[in-house]
Length: 282
Image 1 (cartoon, helix red, strand yellow):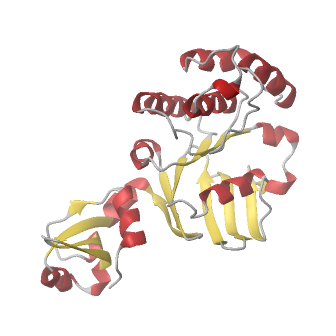
Image 2 (image 1 turned 135 degrees about the vertical axis):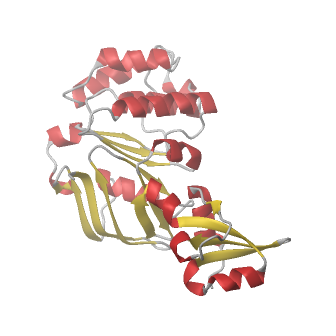
Image 3 (image 1 turned 90 degrees about the horizontal axis):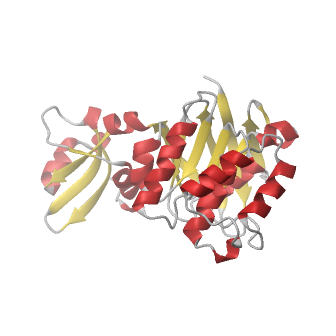
């Protein structure tokens, strides 16, 4: 399978943080969800792909080429929405379109204003008058209007209500109908990622905890609930992490290590993250 992004051993040192050997891929035809708590390294990784942060080590390839060697045409095939406002706030949408036409060879003004109409964005008002959610919609409209084959989205649904988030998920579904395309999306709204993603990459404290197919995670992990004695009977090899509650113990466990017939609950992505970050180890 061709990778639109391949990251190997990415390292970046800051005064109080280390992005440590990050390795994962974004295959063509797939949506990869990038999850982790605030400050885990998601934005630094995405900015490194875009060349906005210079890594200290490791390698990043985009469309099979070193990220630092991409041609203008290659860069035109990348659409990005970052967590902060990334469009000039002193411009209106008509002026934004004019600027983008001079930047992107494949700029499609008709498509851009179609998205603006769909998102109910006023064409003549300055972006500074837009709410955060409206600015996110405008940035996404830009990202989807110049023939991108790779979308890098850092919290693109932040500040949006559930209806608007659902609209954006529909747009991303449409975008992915072309099997050459890929999306790397970070979000704290894990339910959105569970609907959309093929793969989940979990980063914690600057290190990748896992990078796996979403469906494989549900097959691999489960939640056990019971007494401390019952938990102990499962065996250390079955327990990833556990928490103590008022009414007993809960634990993230490996399904294939638990004795047959043991009652287990489904482990969602958010629960898996929670146990890895806050749970106690055996």
